[in-house]
Image (cartoon, rainbow, N blue to C red):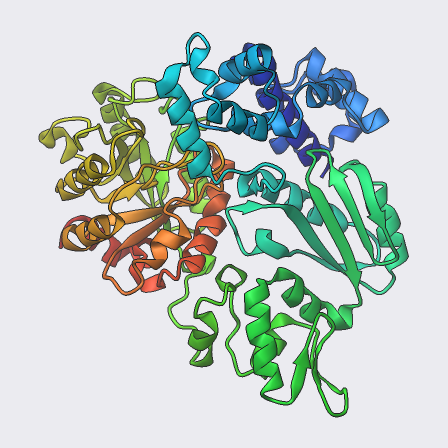
Length: 574
């Protein structure tokens, strides 16, 4: 877990270095990002390696190796501490606003003394930004709208799940290595896959809490202890996020996990159901009111069963009707084992892809998939797109690979770019040569809702388009999605038979669960895809599945739960 901890720290250094250089393409930042990637996949524990061994690893240079050694020896990296002081959390909120960025944030700080979101909002109200060179009234209005669409924030700002989840998982993995720990689970809004979170809640099952609490307080992830008790420790981690770690007896672990997972409304509904049966439900157990005898407590499944309910997956626990559904047994709920293939996979042919076609295909085979869609960017995406000649060469390479993987159908696909008018790369003849196509919005995010709606409907109506990728184009906490008439788009998806992608990236989770819920009673098809740009990202399928659960998407609606014969028949129009 040291390697993963270091990878997270170097990713933070990279992001903050971009701010320091006021350049999102900073060469120094890219070096730190390379080190982070190298550490993520390093098979040897960095703590057991010498500086010369570290430097020999591709992606790790002398400077980054020295910082790795510094952290191993001292538990801190001076460079990172300095960057955090220069760019505190309040300042980072400004940088994440679409239309601002590192360079503009730097100018706002130098010229107007703006250090946080509240100060920026005050300056906008006073119309101070428009007087700055390079801004103007139009830019000021655009930034104000972006703040509104991102939900304001300030002191109660929540952190995007993509930043929180890796930290929570690293912590749980480290806790599971401790002697005496029987289990450890992420709880709260993170477990329910809320798009943002205010903190991290982790529950530990152990008979003796003292050594666990002592170990938690000594972890490298701890930046500042907020409170330390006999069974609970609260601290700020190295990223400045509050973490609460609780220890409970194994006999009550299920009840505690259920309680601290929430949501509050879901828990209240369950407690009411328990009371109707003469029982009480809390973080300790489901118990009989009259004699205090325990009905169930060790596992969540036992408690749901005792209450006459099917097990409800955590992402669904929002008291939006899931309890009524569970009374009759939750049917047609997707899980990771339901997935037969990944249909949005990039290789190093895309400018932002990292691993070769062979490596991506081998990973799909290792995951036991029946089919995989290779979907590198098409030619109209000038930065990352592939030429026709490159695509045809890849098609030949896929033909050769197919002989080596007879159990895996390798589909030669493409991710098309939907332009402002709904048109896409290539002519119809060339498009007809692909086995699978995903069409996505990558630009012109500022168009009005009517034009965005027409844009999407036009793309859906094209006979070559199989699916619409990351429907809104959003990046949670960084870029709002495009605005359009959702009902019209859902109707268009029904009529055309075009699938809507549930993108597995935690930075996207697009379409959102709220949007997916609107399709619950419709005959809309979906596909859950990772949009993987390297082999490790193909494991993100679990997040798309969880988001589909949260959006009540039925497994039968999801095309890549279908067996290969049915799926291929659908893609060919049979």
